[in-house]
Length: 173
Image 1 (spheres, rainbow, N blue to C red):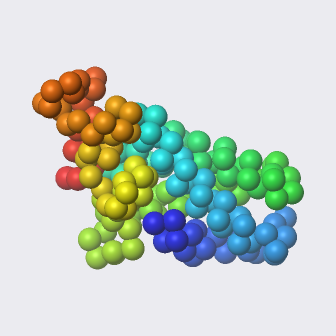
Image 2: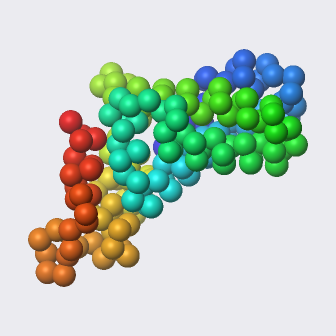
Image 3: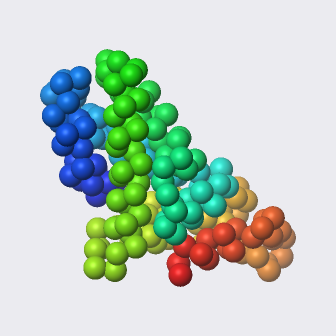
């Protein structure tokens, strides 16, 4: 998934990064990787912290702009750009131009049945750390119960408030 995300960023940052005199050419690839890594890490952090609603919202056609995912990814991206020596104002401008657009394109591609570059089940599998790289509800449940893959209804399983499965089910309609 990260390779496809890198490619998606590369396809959409020509003016913002490559043709930007504030970004030294030798840092173009690092900036692309920083953007895709920030988005990936933000999605993963949101899922693992139980903020499934914000992830589900963007994949269900909600706006990426202003979302918790975009805010976290932008903050991380700005930090990474600063680490490359890009000044704070330029980093903020690049983040504001790149992150919401890439998240929007990611969700569009995921929803497009004619585009196989991104698949929601594979994305969730990558984000949940599933050992097989595929999405399995037990992978997500394991994130919330310390890795004990007990499904609701099994002995010792306690349903999450609001039901994690209820929150996820809207993503597959």
